[in-house]
Image (cartoon, rainbow over all chains, first blue to last red; front, side):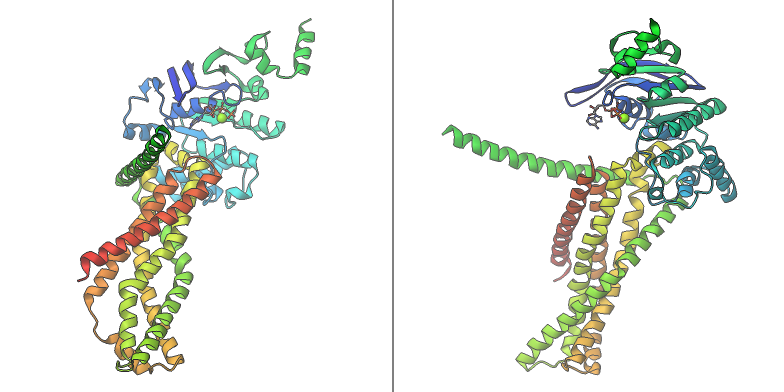
Length: 252
Length: 266
Ligand SMILES: Nc1ncnc2c1ncn2[C@@H]1O[C@H](COP(=O)(O)OP(=O)(O)OP(=O)(O)O)[C@@H](O)[C@H]1O
Ligand SMILES: [Mg+2]
């Protein structure tokens, strides 16, 4: 479980987060949605300490992250897996080396055990036999999948995915969403996903948080979200007039 | 006159803010270097990375260093032979001594360092810069890797091992270049040249050469790491950072060169 308590963050004059609080539970896909530039990435990065919040706290199963020293943070981070918006694969390493890196760095596994774990994760994301490829030989969706494999290789307790399906076709998006959902349940992880894809919201949104102008504008699950009839969230979900009309007609 | 006054105030503002920036950057540089000294998570991984960097820097630069050193030796030999022959009173075997001495004290360390400031400096800065902008450094951080140590220490260590080796190699190749040029140009015989090369040998010169090479390699690697690691923004910024890394590390090399000569040579 991750608790976010009254997070504030501003860059210069621009207030990006104006006091966000929420609770993200184990075994659930927690989605953060919001327009481009609404601060989703900043929220995730503050939670994992890549960006320092101006005030507020983040608690990982009760452990206050902002009050930890650098060493304890480093140790906690080994329980965190993260998929970056641009995948952030190490481009001087092969797929296998990318995924194996955290094991090489932190585990005492034998070479055979590491390879087994790598192959297991690769199979998990449906990319078997790509061990020796380099990131620039992969398509965007394949990179995302390798990114996920790398994020889960150490069996993290907390998984952060920043737009796991931006730039992917609807079918691959759904495959990736399903995958994240599956591993979340399987390993009982606390998963946080940034997205502006409504398919994801409907498909895997156990808990959905809508960010608007630096505030938590709405929170609920994917069923509740369909009952929204007006306001910013309605505009966000039913972005096109076509969808809005469809929605209105459906209600009539 | 107010306009003139405000202009000069503005001028001083720029002056001081850019001075301030230099001090600020220097402070950040020292902090980054300070953070480099922390206990490695897995020493084996650090060694592996260091060997990879040694290979990249060493093998990657060998050809260009070899070509430049050989021709620098050759041109030094030709120029001195030409001048000594003009004077006429000095035995030609001196050329061997002159070539060796100028290679060891100046040409080999300084030119190698300047070349490598261009090659290794821009490589390091653009590698780290693109890792920064593509969030690879953040990805390491999230895994719990101390990036200011893992991404920087191996590069600096590899540089201070490999670059002095390249300097020694370039001394040898320069001497060979000088021999070839002189013999082909009929300035002196092989025996004369060899006699010159062996004469008046001072070990202190070699010590100075190695001190220079060590300081230069540390300067190139650390400045370039700093420039690359602290890139903010996108692809354009990477280009800028790598140019700055080359320019700044060349300047630092030249300045160190002066001070070493000033302090260690009487
Ligand atoms: N390091 C930074 N310095 C200054 N401003 C920043 C920084 N990072 C983010 N911002 C600003 O914060 C705001 C929110 O950015 P953020 O990346 O979180 O948006 P996002 O919701 O993830 O958008 P997208 O869906 O496009 O990824 C933007 O206006 C951005 O300009
Ligand atoms: Mg984002």
